[in-house]
Length: 147
Ligand code: DQA
Image (tube, rainbow, N blue to C red; front, side):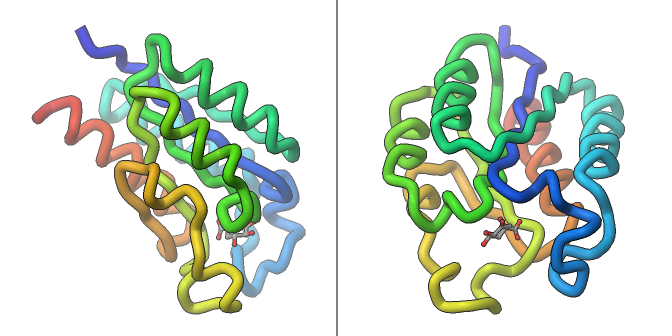
């Protein structure tokens, strides 16, 4: 039987949401996004494990952990999205599907944000919907589970 557990993993500087560049990210805090994700998970019978780290290697460790007993990973890798071969390799090294997400529309921003190192290893990408980028990805995993 497929697990109901979904990891929601957040990378660097996302702990600063609420204070950080509100013109781009809005004024919602990461704690409020975590609550939105748990509410969405409850509605869909998915168990959300929501985490944040500023450290690339910790994201690698959590992706490896997601290979056992986890049905999907929602990953906002922050700036590591644009730089990290290690995250690309970690996603490729596990069988659990990963959805890359971003709060902002990275394609409407600076050119260095247009390139993702992790998109090609991911199941799909959602960006530009604010905090709803997270809940849309959780919905996608529920749809996959139910299909
Ligand atoms: C982000 C977009 C990234 O380019 C940036 O480095 C972030 C946040 C987003 O959610 O919009 O830290 O991932």
